[in-house]
Length: 410
Image (cartoon, rainbow, N blue to C red; front, side):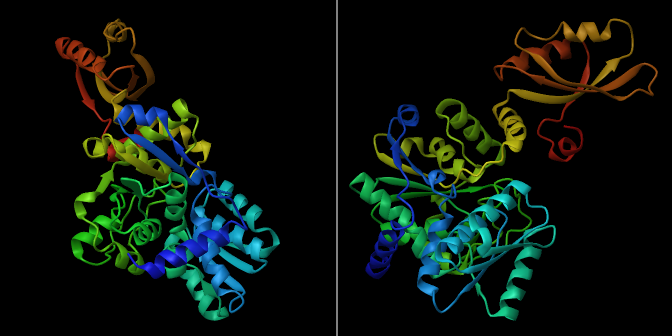
């Protein structure tokens, strides 16, 4: 922990108050009761751009203007919106490179925040192509490339989250849980709090950039990554962020499956009415992993963002049910005789519901392969169903967790 860094973070936070208010720090009764602790949510999903990313963009721009009047970034989401918002605020030009495959909703929001001060350029199918184009443009035009995390001014700006937490809580929390992508938020928070609290860092299984860096002693590329948790799906931790995180303990880094994160998204929406993007749900889902460590303590979970496209909701619900064991898909070898389907239907319990039924193969004379999806209200119901199928001598293959098969037929 550096006193200079702390003072700079406090100064950045004060300067931000002229642009947007502090995001709320709210005690969550549901989570506090569930985990027998004082659980607070730092609601970065309630910032003007629904994520913490505008903090780093603000701090970098306020320090670099007037030496620079053209800012460039590559992003498919929150960083793009933060940069656009600040370009409009400061009245400077911005060029934002986004993959062609970026959802139109995110493109439109970025343009709305930036107005006439920004230009959005769609380049390539993947982020790497957009990044290469952005960096080439900076070299050609002499523009400033604003990294989403690997920039000292950005890290300092993200530390304002920690400054606000201490201010709002009136003390340092006993434990803070942070989502990790490129490491900007975690580096800023650790840089400000130092060793005054305990940490849990949370990453999606499909993009373990911090875990890999700590194991290797330096940032390493963990490609290919799973982009589902797009706000934290980063292939390589930043060099600058790693310098502030290199003393973190590997055992304090938790990896959560993408399907498991969906459980929290659905729970927070249904129970609390809070809309979180996958990265914003990471810290909350991690509570279950540290239950014994946090009991009776004051804990802050940083809900990093709420830019959730509701067109993804059916997929999120599906993945949550799969993880919770409430839905299964299997291929059944069904005899092609009168009454065979009725016999199978009679095996279903009172809470079992068919969500998918499709003949996959009709060429066999005596048997046909059927793709079946069953949804129920308790995982143990499947034990009774499979027992009945086994007793009847039916042949079936559970493909629920076979990703290779599932992506084609589910």
